[in-house]
Image 1 (cartoon, rainbow, N blue to C red):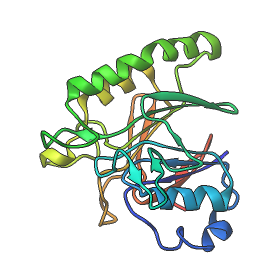
Image 2: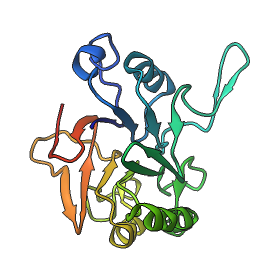
Image 3: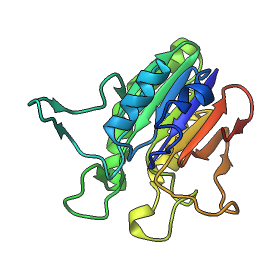
Image 4: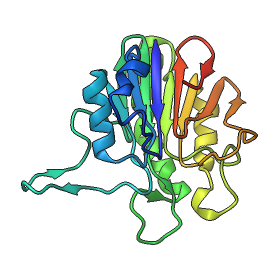
Length: 215
């Protein structure tokens, strides 16, 4: 299975007809936050593959359209925030948002609030363990775990609760965005226990079952 993961930035050649030539063979698209609805809708329309996403701290709660419609998520896409989904031979879960750095911030949470979001997933994760022999395969988030690919400022600090999640539920991968990468020397791949943590900014292609790579 080939997965296209996106985050934080509209990539010109992805938001163009070239996307079919470069990524027409992917089986699944995952959005890791701070991506406009129109971008996700374009990708899912052009590739005609399942697209799951989580919101980032710059995403809006709703988009008010000129025709009177109110959109709460990108059309044709599935908001995976605090949810679990199943694709053939693949279990996905999502946790959106960033650490709270503004009192009125949208999609911003304290570590305690994020722990509560994780707690809401635990019954389904244990059901997966009993039925499929594993809790999940891929966790998609906007923010990274604390101390891994995160920044020194409050707005880009990772969640400590994600580190605990990884240790307890052992996903094969955690894909995140939020941490923008501008130098090739920056670390974007880290192994923690059984979990490979990948910063997908602004996009990354992953061959499920083999080595992760940039597309």
